Structures are given as C-alpha cells and as structure tokens.
Image 1: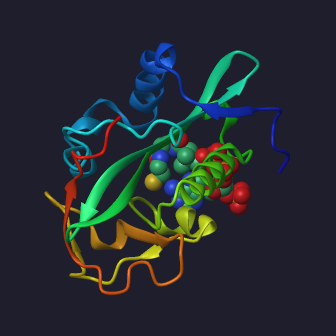
Image 2: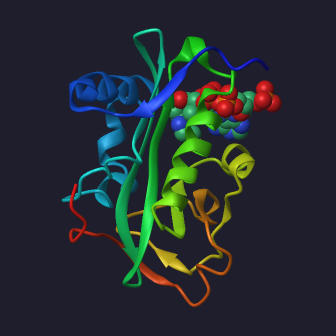
Length: 170
Ligand SMILES: CC(C)(COP(=O)(O)OP(=O)(O)OC[C@H]1O[C@@H](n2cnc3c(N)ncnc32)[C@H](O)[C@@H]1OP(=O)(O)O)[C@@H](O)C(=O)NCCC(=O)NCCS
C-alpha cells in the first residue's frame, strides 16, 4: 500500500460544504439521525483537531473530533471519518486518524470514543468498551462502541452517560 501524495492539514471554514458532502456520500443521507450525531448536538468540532486530506487542491478525506463528557469527565468523540471512494484502501483514513490522535494527545486530551467497526479502528489502537460502561443518548450496537486511552489508565474509573460538552468553545 503506497500512501498517495496527500497533504493533511486542519480544516478551514471554506471547506465546510465540501466536508459535509463528502460525509454524506460516505455515510448516506441518513447519517444525521445516528446516535453519534445526537452526541454532537450543540457543540462545534474542535478547531485544530479536525483535519482534511488534500490531493492537489481536491478534498479527499476528513476527520472530525467533538467535545463530550463521559460520566462528567472530558472526552473526545471521533467522527465522522471519511475518505473519497477512489482513494480508499491507500492509507488516507489511517493517516488522518493518526495525525488527529497525535494532535489530540499534544493538546492534552486523554480519552477518545467512537461508534464504528472494530476491525478497522483496532488498527489505530481502539478496542471495545466493556458493555454497560458507557451509555449513549440513543441506540448503539455495543460491538461498535469503541474507546482509546491516549494516556495510560485514562478511562480508569470513568463510566456513565456520554453527553455533548457545551462548555468547550469551538
Ligand atoms: C472507513 C474509511 C474511512 C477507511 O479509509 P481508507 O483510507 O480507505 O482506509 P485505510 O486505507 O487507512 O485502510 C484500509 C484498510 O482498512 C480496511 N477497512 C476499511 N474499512 C474497514 C471496515 N469498515 N472494517 C474493517 N476493515 C476496514 C480495508 O479493507 C483496508 O485493509 P488492507 O490494508 O488490509 O487492505 C473509508 O473506507 C470510508 O470513508 N468509508 C465510508 C465511511 C465509513 O464507513 N466510515 C467509518 C468506518 S466505521
């Protein structure tokens, strides 16, 4: 697998429409009704952590992180992560994720959760949340509720309801 000559950089407001369209294409128009979207309600994606992948000037990938709390403890929600179909399988998704997680670590974040496919996200270190440990504001397949500690032990003693964190500025 050869990573194409993409540039990864923080997203900027003029890319907003293109990012939404890419996520619509990747997840389908029903994506906004998913539980993970309810977790983002009232918050803004975190500037500096939300990244785009550009091939020349073309947007080919996007990753966003939103602020949430779990049982009152600060956490990040990863998603959406989407890559243009013609660029799939070339490492763009993993490169976006690694860069985003590394920036999150650098900004002092310790915990990340997401709803997604374990076989894919395990490549970046995610694992299944033990059942009953984290509740979401809507239905979720427990097999797809995943977490990652950016700092060892960060989820020790953390459990409860996941909620949007409206105290974090955009
Ligand atoms: C999922 C997605 C972001 C991956 O991006 P990508 O740039 O194609 O991924 P990478 O190139 O980093 O990794 C590709 C590898 O992951 C595997 N993979 C991709 N999606 C997978 C999934 N949902 N489950 C398991 N493995 C997956 C590929 O088979 C490939 O495996 P290989 O390296 O053994 O050939 C992209 O396919 C996409 O936008 N999909 C639609 C939206 C989506 O479903 N996003 C969230 C996933 S839950």
